[in-house]
Picture 1 (cartoon, each protein chain N blue to C red):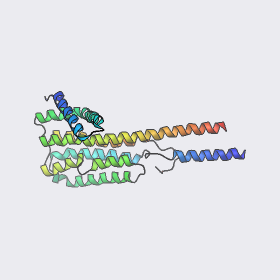
Picture 2: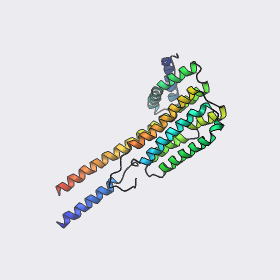
Picture 3: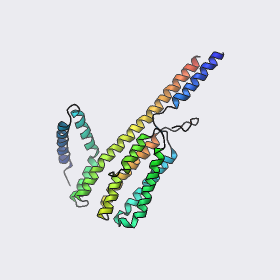
Picture 4: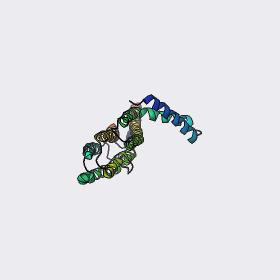
Length: 147
Length: 107
């Protein structure tokens, strides 16, 4: 009887260890909120590009800060390299968003058509991050926050 | 309106030539990947070509928008890879659960 109990304990421990070994981070509500909020703020700021860049320098700096915070939050989560790489692409110096901001700064106000086109692309980039986060497995109630 | 089929045909020829001059072993796969990328970007290509033709965007803006397609493809690939990992984790945990249940009930 005692041997059976020991065996069961080992199996249960093994189960706990194995189910804790994930290959990707589990879903995180704060990360999801960071990405969705950043998307809304980014697209709203891009709408302002029909005006002068210098009039919105504070808002642009605030947006960069918001994106940096969202990135740093995700960077601190283990097994999260696909999301981190996605943020790297989105925030890249030569990425879609920063090339738009550079064009706005150097070439002046942008046309409504071009802004809408770029918003479509930037929105799709955010959607990829948001969809990846929402597609991650929900953490089981009894699992620790190791992922 | 720009003839999108003519543009696609011209691009496909360019992709085939680029693959042949760049790869030896992976030439066929490279052509397939290049054409898949082209098809994925087809709707945007049509839209931006029309806008360029109608003077709604400049040639520089057209180049910029087409350059975006590379980043969009990268982002999509990262998402798909991540979701595949999540599906794998879920499946393996299900398999382990089945094994554990089977083992315990057999003891």
